[in-house]
Image 1 (spheres, rainbow, N blue to C red):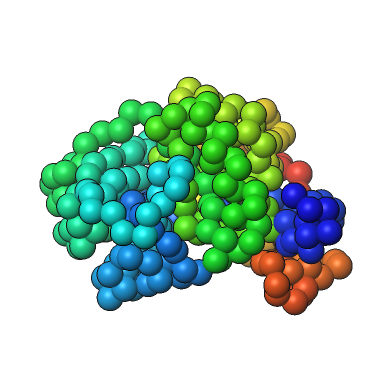
Image 2 (cartoon, helix red, strand yellow; image 1 turned 90 degrees about the vertical axis):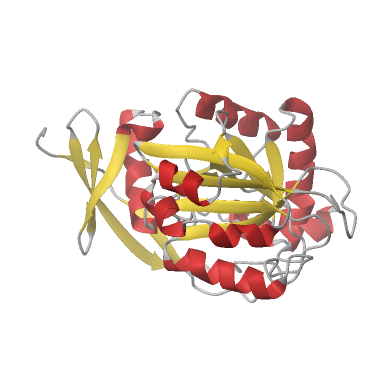
Length: 309
């Protein structure tokens, strides 16, 4: 990459200023992504070959139940129009009810039959009943943001990562239209757990996928698990840093107060974590081409152990 061009990227500001990544993942208890070849605009659900009326309505329905909707493409060149079936993945990120379903549908509009409330509560049986084309996917997948129309960093940094992953872990990586946090590019989401990472290298991305296969995660570059609120994400990561706990479902966010978050371990231990926010100093852009501003940055303090339950 041209050094002069790189200097103006929002991701360069983020790295130079060493902005913390914890607590920056999107919030979603479930994910629905569908393959849509061809070009993507900045708002891909309504700016692609996907029917914009359906895309807008389905995206709105997903948001109502805290489910994330997105478009995906297989790595490589993308024709403007391709007559083919569409791969779809549906995931629940809730600990204890974490699962990934996949299948192919003739047209994305078939997703209109999907029981989104069941996705949100982690009811896999009801989800499959609503869309029988779905079946269990045993291996986690990686979504990497590559949409240059949304942010330049995602194209410049995300596409090389996708190419490398396609060679190292073929069939398990997909381009994604938008994962949030452009300034942390290259960014990725690992499904079904919904863990999100930024500033990835190829080796780290492969390491995280191997950990996901074991039901674990990697703390390097971790932004949070989308299951939790942003404050909950920061608190959970603070406990993982303190304890070294890597098992995905070992920790749950069980309570939030005005300035603290309670995180509980599956073995009964719990921690109270102080979480605060402060304006970014100095101000910085959250996306390429935007003016710098004093965005809020979350900071988690040292977790305090509570009574074993």
